[in-house]
Length: 81
Image (cartoon, rainbow, N blue to C red):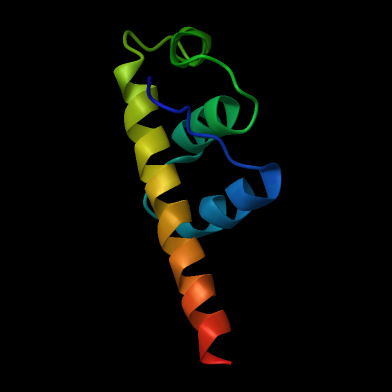
């Protein structure tokens, strides 16, 4: 069984700032609802009147992948000190 992607509100704010120029605010809010609030992909898609949960999954993947890259950067900076 695949583990659900989750992040804290603080982590999401870091991601939001990093992705704000690439992803519109509506899609970022959809990602927040799923990743931070724990809503299902389908319920988020329904809330925004999107025909598919795949749209939500795509933006979740982008946001979560950015968080992983941010964590790697922070770890690298910490190790360089």
